[in-house]
Length: 268
Image 1 (spheres, helix red, strand yellow):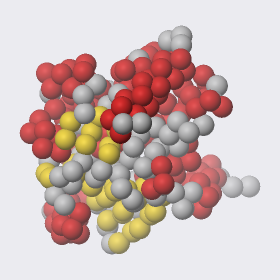
Image 2 (tube, rainbow, N blue to C red):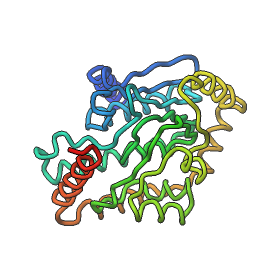
Image 3 (cartoon, rainbow, N blue to C red):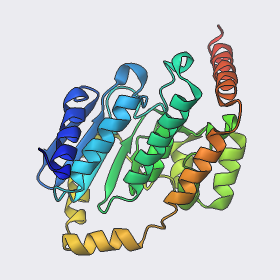
């Protein structure tokens, strides 16, 4: 009979093996790189991708990773929560998926090593929240961000966004559900740097060297004491907001309005 730890490792391996096409995992020395690999849907976060990322982060937390790099294949880093099977989801399924996304965001935010995100393209919803959860945030000059969750009543990532940009900017952007570009993102502190993908290899190398400047135990202690732990409050806010009656109706209205806006913008 397998021990609990052995069973956990087997479970993680199973997730990684079945999801290896949608999440590319590469380890070089003390650097682990995770690449979202669903380019045909803008690397939208479906259930399988979220679980694969959680499994990979669990491995990285135990294998002396000093830097984790997060990027996405194709035209966009991450276009948000995958709603392709929205009509087939029960309310319970939908809320559970949101909970697992919040679990992923919390795991990223509270890892005891630097996480460098390299974003590009259209970074919306949970994709923008994922960027905000990372400790080092870089994006290409053409990147655009939007966080529409509050438009349909879901409180996701709000405290982490405020921690990045401050109260006033967080309220301004999210109250208007406003799209903001890389230049504004850098100005308000959501991004640390704007850099084109052609320069990312050098950035990864420099960040990896910096991540090893102090002993691993000291680095872990630094990350532990400099991250406010609001995980319980964040999860409670998400669950409370998502459990309000009419969640699917609110999301459906938002989707219809978005499609109509896209149609107007393209002249369709």
